[in-house]
Length: 172
Image (tube, rainbow, N blue to C red; front, top):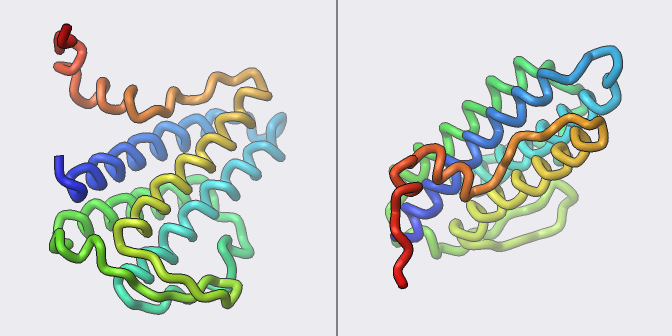
């Protein structure tokens, strides 16, 4: 499997996991769990903003953000629409990116003014791992409310999207 193919699979996984988690957030009682619902939306919005910031770094454009989250909290429906668009952007980006550009180092400026430099591949991995970290935080919030969070693992994703993997025989 090529690096680009693996990254595409990871971003497909992220899109799947984001959808499942947003469904879980939507199931939170807006009255009984108002603080947890709000915190969950803020965490997912932060993940979205970081994704948009790094998309701008990858394309050499200005992202326009002065912080790693927005001042206002979007509705869950607005967040869902924006996350789907962001996930699709990354999938299209990977489909059109020449493989030799994955290792290209790109300088950028963080929202706090610090300078940074990462390869495209490192930026892409950052976006995926960063999203997983915050989905885990939200899963913990759900568990503390005695709500079973979505089973968000890469292995589960692979076996649900490719059920034939369940029939593979292990080598002895």
